[in-house]
Amino acid sequence: MAIKKIGIIVGGGPAPGINGVIAAVAIEAINIGCTPIGFHDGFEWLVERYTDEQHELTIDEVSRMHRDGGSLLGTSRTDITRDRRSLENAIAAFNKLGVDALVCIGGDDMIRSAVAIERETGGAIKVVLVPKSIDNDVWMPLPVPTLGHETARHVGVELVKNLMEDARTTVRWYFGVTMGRPTGHLTLAIGKAASATCTIIPEEFRKERITLDEICDIIEGTIIKRRASGRDFGVVLMAEALTEHFNPEEIVELQDVDRDEQGNIRVTEIDLGHKVKNELQARFERRGIKVTMVDKTIGYELRCASPIPYDAEYARDLGYAAVSHLKNGDSGAMITLQGGEAQAVPFADLIDAETGRGRRRAVDVDTESYQVARDYMVRLGPKDFTDDAWVKKLAEVGGMPEADFKAKFGKFAH
Image 1 (cartoon, one colour):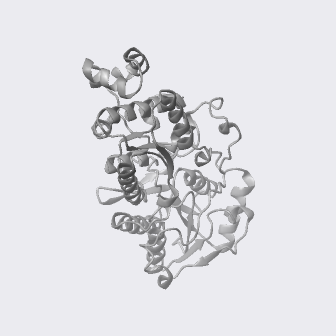
Image 2 (cartoon, rainbow, N blue to C red):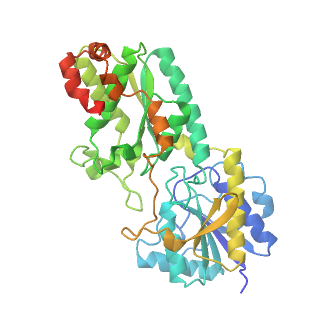
Image 3 (cartoon, rainbow, N blue to C red):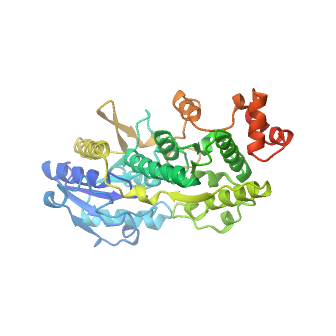
């Protein structure tokens, strides 16, 4: 039976390009004789069985909003799989409104809800997912960026460029903590493109637990190396996801910090930059060295930016492909673009069997691309310990006896 009403729902954090998907879905739905229904604020009202928070979209309303940031329909992190009642209420609301197909726009938080609706209704409500995330962490069969990531990187690079110029002009260090959970994709992408002095992501540690001291040791080494080269300024970027790997005993806030509706730690509430700054200032002050440091959070400025042309085009392709998939009677898949062609990835391939959540992709630190990023950073490394004169200079500018320098930073020689 041909679909008659296509619902559009947005979940998770904002990402550039959402409005482009909404517009493309609405226009194509109307073109094939369907009614597009836009649901406000994700699943927030649907889990209460409210059916008033929606409206029928028109071509006039959406035709020129593909370059607008934000989301016409709003968004929320409400998870309909949190309890049986929420799922049943949402489905009842869709049935009451006669919605027989659904385009879900979201990342790993949205995957579980989309899968649950498709399974619970046995395909009576056809569901497709359009992946969007500035974090770029949604699993895909090929390393294609998620919608919104490239715009977030573009805006982030411009911000970091300004910080780098300010650091040079005022002779200071900026410690930027960049949004992105639970991976380091966005932080690395911004740092690499902007040529930040140093970029630190959780994947590089290759272990579950990370300490604040380990992060501070890397940055302290970077500052010393820059000082030895005659430059006492720079910008260090750290992924906010690093805090998810700290022991609760080390970072007290983790015990009481707020969590979102999926149970994830709100890592933006843990002031990583401030903690790093305080620790490093104390280290240098004990050795009589003055270093001006400023901590800065980079993240919310990126999420609702107007999409760059890449994401504006990408959004339209994804929205069109989503409706085409539903029109053909298909369901239960995430829509991706591979080599310029739409490719549907079955929901079964997206779910992590152990956690029941959407599969995520981490930064592959064994690639040449990551190695290029590392080679262009300023960090202590094996080469810094092969020249005795250079080691002596590093120790001097660091305000340390040479033996102490080697004992503290010798781990970077391997």
